[in-house]
Length: 358
Figure: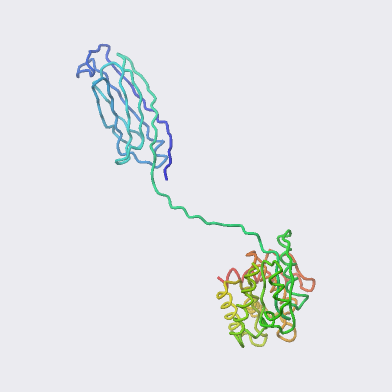
C-alpha cells in the first residue's frame, strides 16, 4: 500500500558574497567567491517518526556541479557550500532514509555580489511503501427470525404454551419486534409421531417459517437415542426443504433424578451437531437454577411438567439463544411470577450463558 504525503520544509539559504567577483563559475578559491550556509529543519519528519540518514545538496551552474552532504543533528541538517561564483545556480536537495530517497526538492538560487538572500524550498515526500495487515470482522446484519413453529407435547403446551410466552418475552425487548408463532402439540407426542402426521408435514412445508422448534418426548433421547436421531433427521430434511432452520428444545431431567440431564444434553447436542441445527439448552439451565435456588419451584407437583416459572425460564433461554441478546433485557413478566422471581430467573439465564456455557 502506498501513501503520498506532502510537506513543506523551509530551507534557509543565506548567501554572503564579497563585493568583488570573478568570471569563473566558481570563485576559484579567492576572496571574491561566495558561500551558502544551509539549515534544513527536520522536525516535521521527526513528528512522522521518520529518520533521515543523509542530506545531499547539489548545486549546478553551466558545466560545474557541486555535491555536499550536510551534517545531520537531532532536528536539522546543516552545512555551508563555499567557493561559489555570482549567477544563477540550480539547487537540489535529497533527503535519504538509508538508500531510499525520502524527499526531494529543486529550485534556482541567484547569487548576488555582497548580498544575503533567503530562499524557500519545497520538499516533496516520495511514495512511502510498506505492507499493512488488515483484519476485517464482517458483521452482516441479517434480518431477525420472526415466524416460529413449535412441534412438541405437553412440555411445550403447559402454562398456555411455551410458544406464546416466548412471543411475549421476545416482543417486550425490543418492543418493535413482531413475532408470529404457532404450535402443534399433543400429550406424549414423539418426533416420530410428528413426522408421520400429514398435517404436521404440510404445516412445515407451507408455513413460510423462519425457525421450526422440535421437542422430543421427555425420556426418548435417553431411552432410544437412535429413534430420536432418526426422526430428528427426517424432520430436519422437511424443514430444510421449506427454507426454515431447525431448532431443538432441550428438555430437562425429572425432578427426582437430576443426573438425567447428562444423557438428555448429550443426545440433543449430538442432534444439533449432526444436523447443523440450533439447540436451546433449556434443560441445562433448568438444572443450574434447580441446584442454585431451592425457593423457586420449576416443576409442577408431578416432578416432570414445568411450572409457570419453568416455562418462563424456557422462554428466556429461547430469547437469549435465538436473538443473542441478554435475558436481563426482557421486560415481560407473567402475572403469576413475582418481581423478585422474575429478576432472579432473567439474571440466572444471562449468568449461565456468560459463565457456565463459556
